[in-house]
Length: 372
Image (cartoon, rainbow, N blue to C red; front, side, top):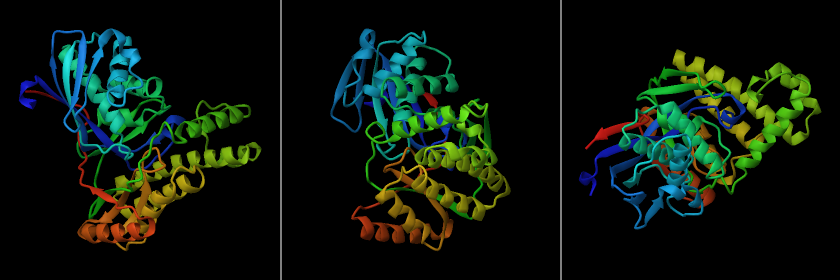
């Protein structure tokens, strides 16, 4: 099947080392593209249709290029339709084509399968229309698809990492300005282990949009006293001075944002200095704040992180992604990874009845295009 297509276009899933739920608050985050990705095999078909099929599903879907706004309720193909619509509305020509989609990013895992699908679909459409690939522009249109078509009021981090990632680099991305610094991923004697709690999450049905609304409400209240354009610009000192007037829940949300921004700053220094103990401690503090202040973790992720943190070879562990399920990352001594996995698997199963999955993933490039 695959050899009949003209191009192979990929976009990556992502992990986020630290900086959770602050991308939509204008903060700096530290994501990296991973080798779990969505691959699109594509060829023009001379029609006015985008014909979708999947390597992992028996379904096939045909999208009318003139009616892309009408596919929001599709079980499969809605993300592709939304991505194509936003690309079309931005003035790009949509060429009728056949797309075979092959996704190795687990759905509902917090590793951004939706961003990988959106970004790779737009990159594939640009490729067969002979347009130059602009990863940042594609990321912005993919984010627009997630927000306006899929209904998740997300920040830019996932789509940016999926499109713009570089092999063996983490990104220090300013979500307010889109300035991005690429940092070498040097972990020394340690490795990052990705673990799935296997409690699926759905960001639309979860409280993700509610958290977004809470941070926006808090910003409006703070702006009555301070001239700031995003919560990430609020310093710890200012938070202590001005948070007393906030409702209790909003105060907790802002405390997470402000403290997580500071953790990203310190984590950048730790990574540059190769100080893994410091980085591990920051992961632990990040999870505690996500649990206690932002309240986006839940019983299963908390149990998984607790198991990881109690294993002697682990320096730190935290939930990544939107929350309410999905994956954790743990900083683990490389020569103890198998021992760590065995311990965490047993401990988590005993605590929750769920079987954890562990993923082997390398830090990877974002968009790739290959002529077949």
